Image (cartoon, rainbow, N blue to C red; front, side):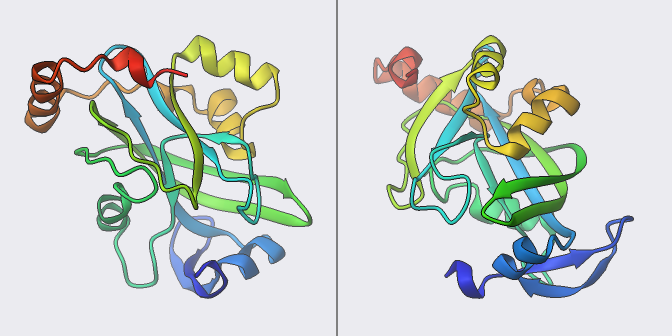
Length: 198
């Protein structure tokens, strides 16, 4: 449960300084470690998710493919790999894409203050969102994302990624063998990626 999930408190150099409850971190604006994943389709589009309205903050807002937090004692890459299929039911190999430090007001007196490890990956295939977490998914181009910014449809951290960390929107690492196998399987089943665009 979110109420008892623990996150890793860090200092400005991303050194672990203890643990705190996730909601407590948001209430106090405590700096903590996080990860964000952006998956691309190999054709210039990125997979976005719309947060379920029932989420305790930023409900109904669009965000990148997957966000999360390593738990105390857990390495960031291990946490990202473990949770990459949660919420959307997808599998993809991940590569490190940098780090990003931000602080943002997410409403209702809550603050996201995170030292974020960024990851890229490629994915094609069926998206199976968890309805308790995600209300909608779509593939979006960079142009689409900028239009969503103008319409105030993005979660606070994603708006900051767009404005201050644009490279995160460019999923450009080399396609992996797993991606190639996924692509071939999808083509063999006569699926079209356009079916997943909103």
